[in-house]
Length: 198
Image (cartoon, rainbow, N blue to C red; front, side, top):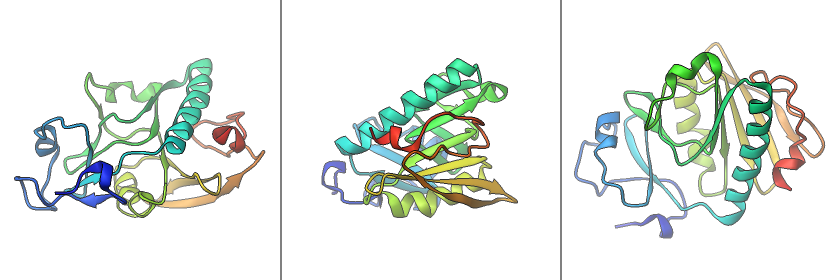
């Protein structure tokens, strides 16, 4: 049996007693005993992620802090960071690294999880998670109609900004250094990309 500490990538969990892969639901996910590992259900497939490293967590903290300060100061909504379950649909329960729920969608914030699509999702695409973040999770975010998705490359210190158009993500570019992001959800965000990696 694999463990999150020994994983080198996000992997499907094939050793649990439960539904066949592709048939996992939010109710099946909720029944998994708490064991300290990070699980997600994407398109009905149960996945386990490796434990994040220190650099990953540092970046998560910086992005969260900058977004929280801006969102709170502008009274736009709330900013959250993982691990926190986001139930996108019946067969999709994910734990984004950082995400924003705007005021008009506060009804999606439940006591134990978010039910519905956040307005902005940020994933730190480390080498162990990039394939998963850019394929399976990207598709699930698009299907749930998450309007904006940031993919952060910690090695290159860049952020790719994707926006949803006609159910498909379109890249507005890959940004770095002293550039500010042309966010459509958080317009006029005054943070330079390099600040996320400081």
